[in-house]
Length: 268
Image (cartoon, rainbow, N blue to C red; front, top):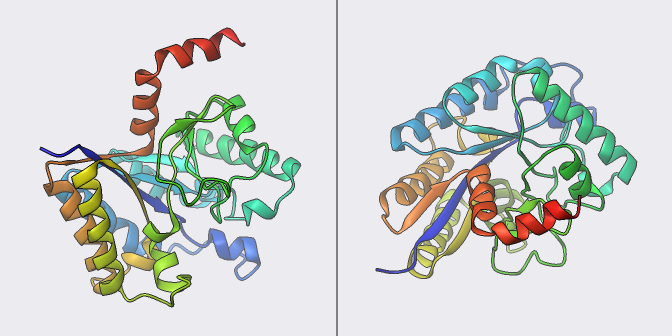
């Protein structure tokens, strides 16, 4: 039997947070398609195949859409932080990042959620983010580093003590459909690529971290949803693949590296 591969299913961005951040909207909209249709469809899909995902949500959603966050948590999924209103994280100064990390974490905690993972909106973590996350008690970050973004995915400990659960742009649905340098990909093209990636991970081991957006892949029962469903179905049915959420990956890494954990503790 080949090496066991790992698939991490993640969901990014809820409601009008991005539009609030850019000024394109000024109030929450409970009928936003991703909230109204996308999240329920995703929860039903994950329940059908018995898989657990990580939903990275903006702190703003804890104020305006707690009912949606409650439904995600009640279904057994992890909730992590994704900025405040989906800022362009890499373009913020360090002080602003620190402020938003404290505010976003507090908002989720007031909603009854203890976030253990963070993903930077826009992908890149930026300086000081990891150290603030460690101070706030996070286990891991799931962002991108310019220096390692083309390397094979590898869960590892950052110098600040937290774990990184990385991803590549090509496993992001929005990137495939709207930002791919080779041109916008159709759901059929993206699906074929993702299935090939799952083949490789199943055969050789390693990690594939997928990012799906409710408003992109789950607002209707169309081709984009079929591509999402294909990834979940394949990952769930292949005995060589292990589907985990981000927190599980981070906890597994900590458990497998007790010496490093002890060394970290001795420095504090």
